[in-house]
Length: 256
Image 1 (spheres, one colour):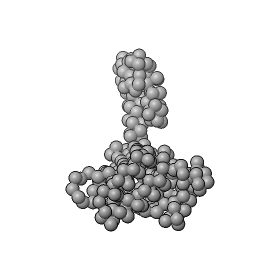
Image 2 (cartoon, one colour):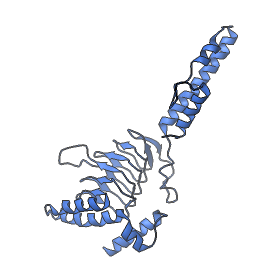
Image 3 (cartoon, one colour):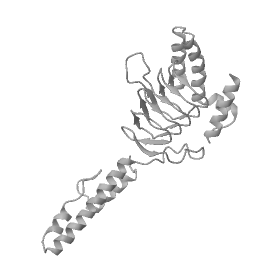
Image 4 (tube, helix red, strand yellow):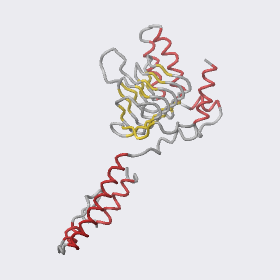
């Protein structure tokens, strides 16, 4: 137990630049407290002792804000950072060297007593608020973007984002220790799609203007200038230039 605890605390000190000395991590990190409670709850659960495992889990949730079902299998060096609102279901399996941020749910999608929760491999980062639901497998070295909803298997060495989650990077370079926590620096396929549409509209407008001049079609420029792009957080009277700036701001994440 002491060897395990020492290994877990060193892992937190290694991955969290805000961590301090050994005693500070032991006393002030709810993630390590939740794992200690889970160690005992899981032991009683395997011994088929009634009530006690769930009672320990309940006390742990009350103290730490982290709910781990006694039946969940948790690997080594699992770092639950901050941890508030984390829920880990009964048949969940979590591998080694996994980082889980606050608000994450590893949940089930069935009411039957079967394997209904996800299985996470090794060296995975699960971003804030992500939901991984059902009996699915997340391969080694994956990154789950913040607030993503993962409903299907994710192959190893992948990055997924969105609702529902989509694979945006696959079989790229392996996630290294140096940048494995940069779960905020992930591609945004929705913003890319909007940017592509806006660019195409600009190109079509330019083409129409050229054609109107070649065919001597009067009034086209006036019509195009009157028809502004759809507004995003506009006040109903903004110019086309202002609207395009709002779209650019949306694409780059301002106000989200």
